[in-house]
Image (cartoon, rainbow, N blue to C red; front, side):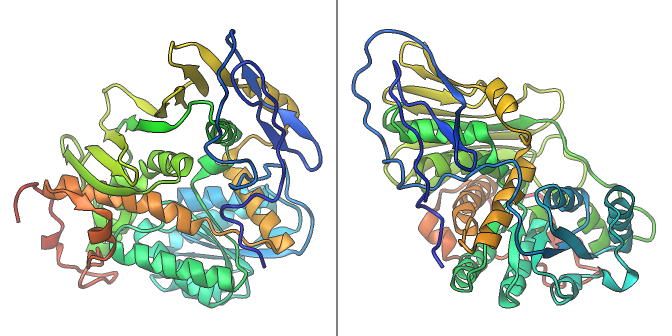
Length: 456
């Protein structure tokens, strides 16, 4: 089977209009323009960064094509796992969920109840699995595909086992928290391709039409050569779980997982990876080094920071600035900005401006709503995944997501230590966040401390 990670099989419409090419999105045989060009005057000739057909663009149709029936198992039944389960069910006909697994029984039973009441899907007790090894039981239960939405630390192991057993995987982001997990992801992704297994990750901007159209415009050369950018995820404090009577050390940390580095990777990895992924996706570059800082100001539980600022140097020498914060009551901004020699793009407005500040292209969200019934990128990523599985045309998104994931890890480690991190050193390092005594009971909590930069 043909691997589909960089080459598009479809041709996309191009037409010059004042300042660039109009984008189009495939609709199963027709094309709908979802862009508008603005401004005036004669534009200089635009040189594409990449020629159409040399990079992958997903076919974002409303609903997956009918085909082989697919039975899915959900591994990780919390908020995101539950969301992914319904996204999967809403993406196609002939798909169902037959097995659930989570560390805790209440999570499994809660999702089972929702599936029963909202979709009429009855998961028997024999197909509800609990514990740290529940993933194996789900994968071995006769499913065709798995939705992996456990805390990020566990995802490389779960992906590896699913691939060994011949299952297609949906991996929620991030897909690893350390160098050991990164290497496992890359090796497993190669095995998945060799086995003709399709893998999609939860970087939903890759399946959001406004981002896909923006990506195409930038590849068409509308902002010129990319010279840098700034990626933002500045928002409020996330949820946390105060320790309850009867919870073991491990149970507390897993229930409070977004606040512990070994489980989430810290918020620069768990959340800000979305924004870093946009830059590595749009540029096709990986970072060679990172220097940054961060601190812990108001986080209540766990051992993480609540703000980071990182300067990344990319392969061709340009710089990307990363800024993320989880502190309530501060200025918020979740977006991406990319600068080029001809102009700039911002996801805040989904506009491209020339060097005078004049808007020369803008994504038409109203046209999308008129042309498509499905506009939710969380569902569209499952539409694309199912279409690849049913068509036999393999897609490997894990290898691409791993680049942004490792960039986030580089930034985190630079902030934690106060030193400069490099891609080559970190990807080959022994960095492994696995607790020495991982179990569901008592653990040595002395190692879970907030890092202090500049110290050993």
